[in-house]
Length: 290
Figure 1 (tube, rainbow, N blue to C red):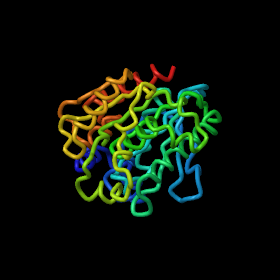
Figure 2: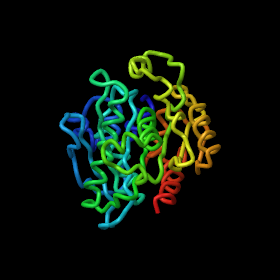
Figure 3: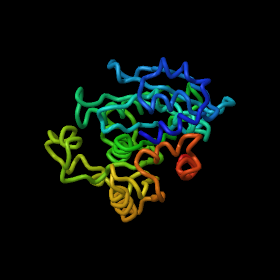
Figure 4: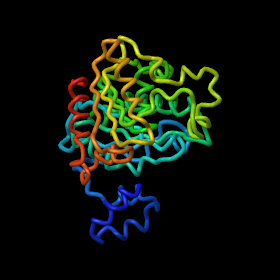
C-alpha cells in the first residue's frame, strides 16, 4: 500500500484532523482524504444478518434517479481483512456512474473459512433485492463487482447460482459480473492464504469459479494488470477463455504497468488516469443491465 501513502501526501493538511480519528492503515487514510465523486451515502451500517460483520452501506446517484441498476461491491483482503468504510470512494465512484451501490462487509478468517463468506455475499445480495427499490434501485437488474478476493466472491456468486437460490434470490437477476484481479483458477493450493481458507474443503475443484461456467453464465468484465504479482493474470485469462468457449459475452482487459493494488485504486478519482478501469467496466455493466 505504499502507493496509497504517496497519494495521501499530495493532499493538503485540511484533512489531517480526520486522519487522527480514522484507522491507521494507509487505505483508511486514503478513504478519508482522497477526493471523491459526487454521490449520496443513503444508508450506513445496515444489517443483512445478525453478525457484526454482516453490515453494508448504500450509495446512490445524485438527483433522485429511480430504477437504476444495483451494483453490489465486494472488496479484497485475502478473505482475512478489509472493511467497507475504507471503500467509500468505490461506492461513490460507481454511484456517480448511475448505479445504486451496495458496499458489503462479510465474515472473514479466522472466524470463518470457505464457503461462509460466499453465503454472506448471497445474503447481502438478498438485502439489495429486498431493499434496493427504497434507494432508487431496480432489484431485477443486479451486477456483482469485486477486487481480488472480492472478485472471487462476486464471480462465484454469479456463476454458481446455488448460493443466491439458497437465500431465495433468482440467479437471473444478476445481469453481469465484474472481476478485478481475481483468483479464479488456483489449484493446486499454494501458500498459506489458500490453504487456510480452502484447505478443509472436501471437494477442491468445487471451490474454483471455472467449475461453474456454462452457456447460461452471466456476462463478465474481467480485468487484470500485467504487473500483478499477487494474483497472476493467468487467472483472468483462463476464466475469460472458458466463458468465451461457452458462448458467454466476456470483456477481457489487461492494463499495462498496473499491479494488484493499483487495479482497484484506478477506480478512485485521483488515480483514475492511470487506467480506464472505471469507464470500461461501467460501460460494460450498464450495457448488460439495461
